[in-house]
Length: 399
Image 1 (tube, rainbow, N blue to C red):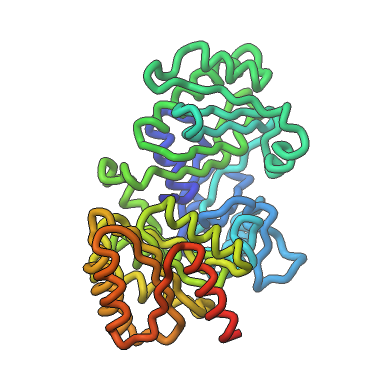
Image 2: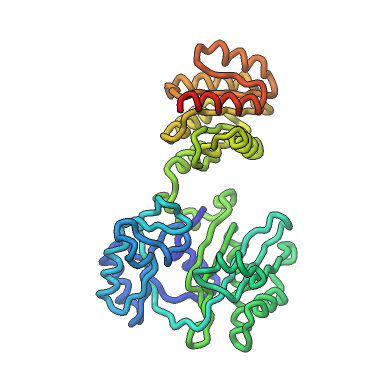
């Protein structure tokens, strides 16, 4: 789960992390009122969407010459003008794709005199099972280019969770950022604070960009992104309350209600599979046969009739879907029960696109008999390769 910048900063502040004063706003009037509560005379008006690259982004409705989603304002009048242009309009960034995201919230912060910008992030390194702390002296809007062109400017510090954050980790961060004196000490303290927040909140990713050295010699977090391990959210109702469903795909929200793992993709063949690994293999073999998957959809080990029906409905809401491939391995759930669910779901949703089903596992022959006797135009496949070839052929008939 992702949250907005202002929400992430409020969480980090509870761990002692230094951030500029800022206030969230949902309307133009609230943005102006927020600015009145800040010291001024320089303000920053920031669009709040779940995507990076906001500063370089462009608003669809304002034309190519308009300013981006993060703007400086030197007066209350400028704050009002920026807020009017941002709220309700669609911001397109390198991370949103061409569709962009509508800006429904703003964050008005105190302007900061920036001396230097740094980069700091934390992620779970799956290869080592440890937390990786990634730092660079080259913070700012071009960090992706730095990673691509000059990776030697990025330092990774790995922390064993059994040991936890130790003083030498803090010193390594400060050394990598080439900080001296009081700034060196501040970096060590802040690195510990960020690590504590990362672990305590069950974060999946925490990114600070930029971490700024201000004119008065302080380190402050000017921008941050934070995401959380969805499997751990039950431990954090205060974090769950920060969820903004307007930033999420409606189909993904609907899928979560049925405990379905769904991600929309750009292809034309809908996939319904049980097991993430099997789902990845299914998508790969569709591409190998010359077409593209329209989604990742894992119904899990307990593929009940209700889940299968919900999955069909979600897949068919995508107008790009021209055919569906169901690939189920019946282990805990028997193939005949799965077949009953597929038939019932296909009838309930009045299926109008080709459907290819590959079943394997317990009671597979009974399952195939149910599909063949259903009276529905369901194409049965012998194996995964056969299934991919058949659904691709069916889709190309339509095209």
